[in-house]
Image (cartoon, rainbow, N blue to C red; front, side):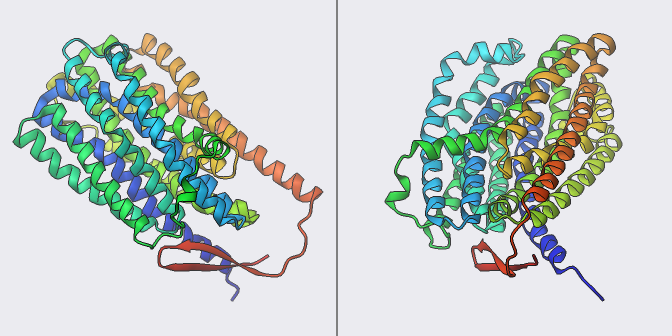
Length: 471
């Protein structure tokens, strides 16, 4: 009986990378959930609201790390797919050099912190705790950004499971430190910030150990750290969509905080903190699928293996949408169970239960969009990926958040994301159709030359993973 071995290999590679990446991203999402849980019990609704107001600025740190890390990872994978390993080494070195100006830029924002937080919706009673949280996380931002970069490089170096292990170890450290700093030492929001930074320092040190241990396929030497402005521009250009992904999350929280404060007060802001923890957890699962397919899609794009690239992409889309359906069931079914876990007050409970129920429809559309953003970025089309990211958070979502609450009150706030994501899903499907038609036309105009079967080499920390390509 005929069996398509190529499909079997694609599936194995997909699950090998996607599962490890998804667990890593979920771990990053659970960081926020853990912080919210301990702050809810240690500082109440005010602490929850303060950390949610401060969170968009902390996401700016992650956004810089994602831009540099994912931009570097895409560029490295494309270079390796073309067989240019020396260029991949130089890209890695320049990716790390970019962390220095990124951290300096974050520090330069601190003098204007209060006006920024007030604009983000910080009521007077929330401002001191929110300010402290951002000051601590920005001061240790280098470790947060470096961890993102190094784990992204590890996934593209054939070590997705090791990257996952580092993230899980960091989460375990964060839970222990949160418990100690928030509940035992009564550090409140500041204790939660210190727990996050120290956990990221642990992740950073573990990742550094991988690269200096000799297990990496990068040739670590002085020449790879020579500053090359062209390489840096390529990294940043490739990483702009990833920066937008994180900034879009920050924009979502920023806009929701302002509208919830306006229409429901501090209790509604605290309720949205709970809703955003659920959203971020499901989003990280879906984003993990997109991050997981990136090394494979970029490598196959560089190697010219478009059929296998498309197969991997389809697996990613289907998986992310199925996760979205599960997220819808979780949010709607758990609307009465999840809010009490955060020790929320009576009014906060009422807002959170309603918000979880109404916003539940967003997740399948979110899965389609997030994997599509990663795919177009991975094949070297950052413009298309950026349009999907920035059009949503700076056009459709703000319009929805301005109009719907005016008509439906706080219910309109919870419905804004499903409405905007439905519009983005339609645009995303249009881009996929356009991309498929473009490739069909190119195939007709430029038929591929005959080539004998060859072997695709994917780097692995334990050796070389070989998968024959049937042409």
